[in-house]
Image (tube, helix red, strand yellow):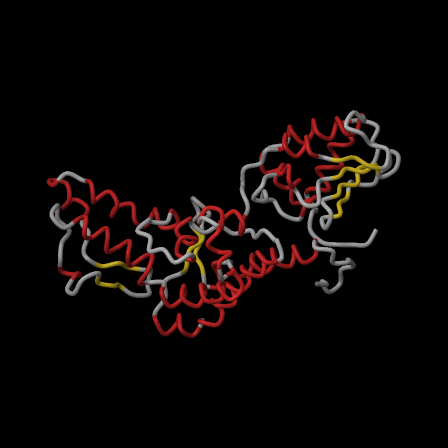
Length: 318
């Protein structure tokens, strides 16, 4: 992979950013293929009319192929589906309601357990609306049928079935077909749904003490070198968002691989990049390698590191 206008030799890091940038655009809600819940940041297929979904069948298949390619090339992707998606990819029929639709389904979930004398207060009819697209009757004549204490559980079950299965069938079918073109066979059965999710998206749980313990040092640095000690003190004092930015800066991804930060491949390395200077820290993301000048104070190190983290995209030759 080579980006126009950027220098760089693809030893893995350039391809990693290519996948990340492509996925970021594909999952942009403005393109109409997926929705994103603002509270949970989870993605889900945007329900669409049958004809509209069939027109984009190839696009959804290509997204499935892209995810399979990322797994094949050991690249972690920056999106997040609810766990039910991975169960569906593995062939399960799941009644689990994805968190991405929790806000829309809140009243329906509550109606299933409400007291009989409160059910009428929900004012729910047997229809499901998706903005200005269409209203769908969950049963024939559902638009005229009220939800009662006697039928509320049936209503919730039908709503979840519509949300997870019927309304997205034209999108999910090609998506799963594309995914299985690269990730089918006996090997897929070796993973649970949660393990498959970690394989695709990694983990969000940062344990930087694990990374620190497994870090290797080169070109004159050791674990006890003063700039190294300052570096880890600064890193541990960063807010969670800053720590994720650091992980992105040195590895090309802010997600943790399935085995944890202690098992980065290749391992994280910090090298001495010359004496104190105005030069910023830099990284070889292909090799998880940080080049850290021998700054003369912790304050200078913090300033230069934070400036680097704010400008952590793009490639050049050094």
